[in-house]
Amino acid sequence: MDTNKDGTITIDDFDDLFNSHGGAKMDDEMWNTLLFEADKNGDGVIGFQEFADAMNQIIKDNLAKKRNLSSP
Image (cartoon, rainbow, N blue to C red):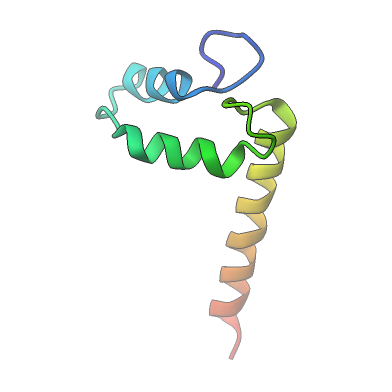
């Protein structure tokens, strides 16, 4: 996801990634929301640990939803 290989993920990286794979241009508000949610230290970029933490939280949330759906 770090399209410019600077060690962080920015809004430009998100945009470059999706546009390079034929995706529609995503709206800036959505990218800002994603960045805000993952950028825990508030420096305006997503570092490796912030990315790992965000992915871990997504996995935990999805597992919890699946468990709730499969419970009688």
